[in-house]
Length: 336
Image (tube, rainbow, N blue to C red):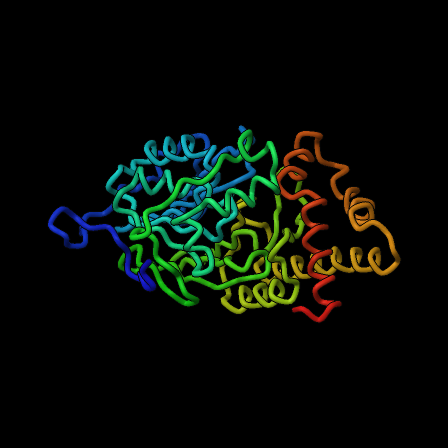
């Protein structure tokens, strides 16, 4: 695996970096594609057939880059959208996954096969799992059970020579005046990074800010086991604010309304609230899941049944409770 890949990857047949611009897509978007900023297209990957649950983002330029592939089950939708936009097999220069959870990176091996010139960018701690995903898939099967195959799919291996590690601060060149900057952001997962677009100013935050499905309208923390770490999560959120992004975009889902400072403040407050409720339940001998459900399920009272199902499937109380409980136990045992 290569340790540095800061200036794109797409080459022409002679081996020189291509000087031709990738097709501009803003005027040719489908029903699941929409422009959200100059040269930034949001692609709804329609996880499980659901709208506005999981997004990928195409960053346009001489060397276009896709941020997030979504799950393997969504690859056909994603490839169809990219084709409709005008991105041909030799056009895509790079694919970035914010972390290796299957709802973000499950499609990366298939996308790499479809775009043979594209470098695959990932956090150092996730790189080996893209090359050899067996252990990751086995772990996911224990977490998701039947949903692994019925909803998410698995993960095809990415050739090792295609994988490029992104250290903190590394830049991917997309165009003459556009770079994507990697922001190491553990907390949700130890292999998590965010991507800051120099031209639009948008920060693509993966799951580090949480989950907010537009039709549910509630920001929830994303605290799954085994990697959730409260202190690291809050530190990462402060790092996001320090970068002064123009907006924050989530994989689940889209641009968050409000100023980035307000978004970060809310994310920290929400995270503190969930951990406080869980901690009180643990110290009082209560059930953490029950305590969290009682405290936060009422936030969804205005959402439809299908919207509640989407959120619970993607960001259920059970998963968040397990991650918080694990972190609190390690903290109390002095293991952090």
